Length: 287
Image 1 (cartoon, helix red, strand yellow):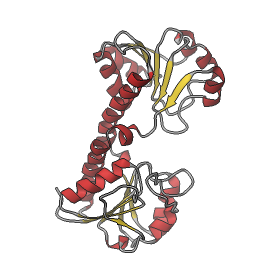
Image 2 (image 1 turned 60 degrees about the vertical axis):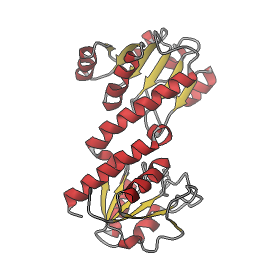
Image 3 (image 1 turned 45 degrees about the vertical axis):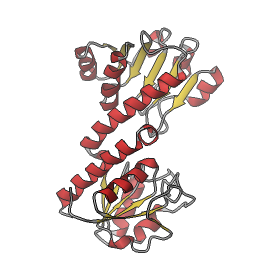
Image 4 (image 1 turned 180 degrees about the vertical axis):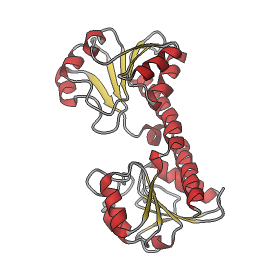
């Protein structure tokens, strides 16, 4: 654990609320902003004093896609540039999924920006929490058990590799579709059936559950039309996801875009993962 530091946790969901509590439990000084809907936090009305922090922690994702802070637990709609303007040059800012717009703002204001979600240790652990959350949604949404269900996992990166064996451990019959020969070999090495994505629509009709982890358009009108009646599509990819949502609605396909699952199903664990990763960043930078 780091020696006592001053942290500001700004915006975010229940992950960041849990993170603030965990940092306080470690004995650090913790202030929060744009988390006023959570009770028990030292929530500030302004960002005065944020420039004194050893580390400012922005949420995952940091922005709302419109240049503003991602703050679902607040009425505040604060531009990210306004937040960075309140900080001192060289100050450490840790953010999740920092896009080029935020990176440009960090350069403009001279702060030291680090993307904690780009760290391998967080991405790997976050995949486990996401996989468990996906299983929870599948159990809630499907009218059948996962035991003996036919499941197709699209993509076999960190998330696909975390999810597929867990589904199989519950008795599901799991197939993997991936472009990479290497990923298909990994899946086969785990005892899973694996194939490519080129002719996906030709073999979709037998699955009860499709789980997409590929952050690119992959399930269009033709693919969705090929699904068996009653099949559930669970999209775990970040926006815009891999599903043609307009076609899914038109066809009456049950499709769920499950974003930020760790923040919804395991916020304390997810907050702890972020905490540990931020500690690693600070130790490496000597903050």
